[in-house]
Length: 135
Image 1 (cartoon, rainbow, N blue to C red):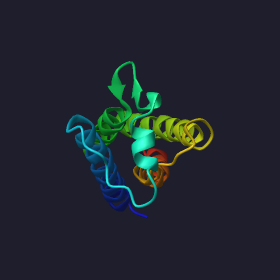
Image 2: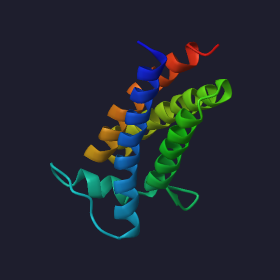
Image 3: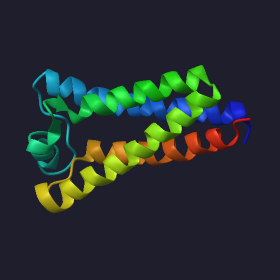
Image 4: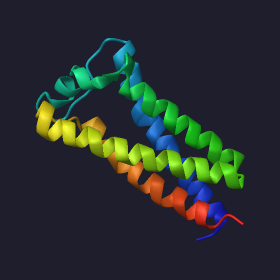
């Protein structure tokens, strides 16, 4: 896969993440329920004590991370590639932590959170590939 194709894929994955996290951020600040396809898991998760860290909504943290990754992909230096891959790695670990919380502590699953998990794993793969191609 070419460098350009990897950068394009990384940008698209980051944009998908911005979309998911942006929607959840909007729903939080609009004080509205998110659209949920099954049960009430989304509301349960979004209203749990784990939906914020130090008063900052987790969705805002995700939005900030995806926007930062997008900027780093556009910047495209060796340091930017390392920072983007590192941020995606931390994001994946955090997503795994949140998934464990949903399954075993909150006992509810948010489909939007799962969508984020589907985005962050390929983001890490593509960004790691980009990092490994750095001169």
